[in-house]
Length: 184
Image (cartoon, rainbow, N blue to C red; front, side, top):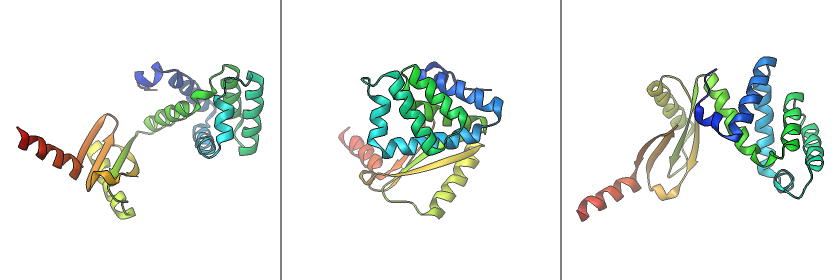
């Protein structure tokens, strides 16, 4: 398995790599990935859940009980539930969002996918997103998973980020460049 050194070097990456290895061995990568997406959504929606995972005043056992209850309520797989228990026991629940992101990156890399973010001044239509996804897939030579954001400050155009590459075709950047050129 080819996991980038950057992911493995981080604490979250080491936990995510271990979870991915266990999920691969048991053939449950997609189930664990679904569990983690469900958990990520629950963390985003619930202030109480975020507090339970980040509050250092809660004991290990209190955190373990809280995540066990959440896992049961969300109907998470045994592997994901056990993983949450290990995190609670090691006082690492606060890093859970980073671990979820690292797991998703590892799983996407295994599937030969690359993640791209497109930011536009106005919401893109489904046809525009599909067209952009097809062009980026052809450019990258592998499947591109696209997420779209809106930033009205761009004025127009797009900013596409694929890994560490950034393609900035926004009007704001063009105006700034023109302004700098005129000052020189």
